[in-house]
Image (tube, rainbow, N blue to C red; front, top):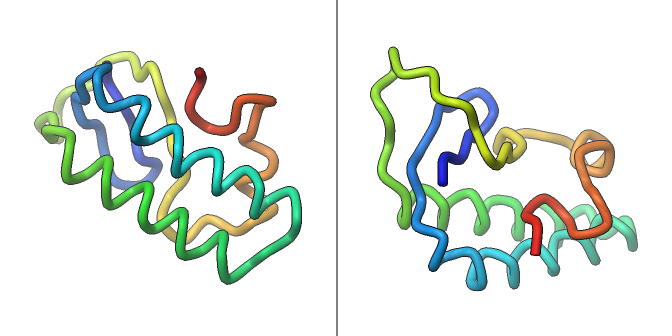
Length: 92
């Protein structure tokens, strides 16, 4: 799967990592819904860091269709709230 982190670029990520990332996504969703700003910031950074660790960066000149789009590291709670679906940022 191809994942885009807004403002950073794209990475390829094996589908086998989705269950682990969904745990962080569930935490993020709960923090956004409760308005927990500090928790939100910590979990967002952890989610993005894990995607970077598990994924492989695509070349900067590569423009592949992204199957998953994640917010930038400096996104606000409100911006992420607008991006969320019922499943969070990561489907499943």
